[in-house]
Amino acid sequence: MSGARVWVAVGVIRDEMGRICICQRQAGQHQAGKWEFPGGKVEAGETLPQALTRELQEEIGIQVEACEPLLAIEHDYGDKQVLLDVWLVSRFAGVARGLEGQPLRWVSVPELADYGFPAANQAIVAHLQGMRQD
Ligand SMILES: Nc1nc2c([nH]c(=O)n2[C@H]2C[C@H](O)[C@@H](COP(=O)(O)OP(=O)(O)OP(=O)(O)O)O2)c(=O)[nH]1
Ligand SMILES: [Mg+2]
Image 1 (cartoon, protein in one colour):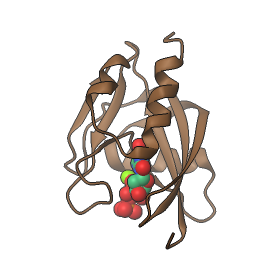
Image 2 (cartoon, helix red, strand yellow):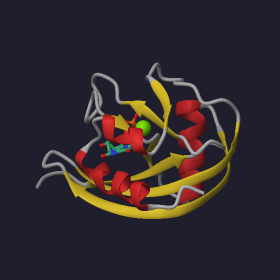
Image 3 (cartoon, protein in one colour):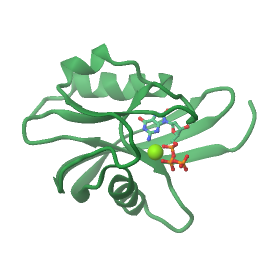
Image 4 (tube, protein in one colour):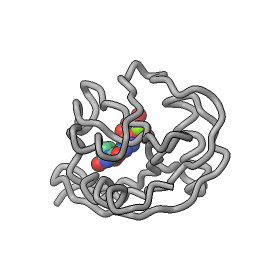
């Protein structure tokens, strides 16, 4: 184990058709090439909803209107430890686009199985697969 633990606000953004927004992590980033749920590090003094709202505005240009906590995951990648605070975003304004050049897709919950996610995300995907989709 090495380094400090990074606290991350992660958004599972669901549209009116039940699809989920995923983005591909870029070259040079930790876990590059893997798909993720958009989000990023919580800054000092921020609440989780504040961090989530800021990150989703910065990364994909949407405004969070309703969100609720889904689950929290601690994971040790060896080179980095993360605490992912995963929130469900059930209402938002704006059109999601990859503002940092990252590929972005809307996929159904079954389709999540076709994408390569960081190891910590397996618990998120399993949680979504076990949830009622209404
Ligand atoms: N956003 C996001 N990060 C994830 C997921 N799964 C996962 O292991 N992570 C890890 C990868 C990174 O080590 C960390 C998130 O950092 P980040 O690179 O998104 O942080 P950030 O947006 O604030 O970007 P920066 O400060 O590096 O510019 O959490 C996920 O689904 N979404
Ligand atoms: Mg990020």
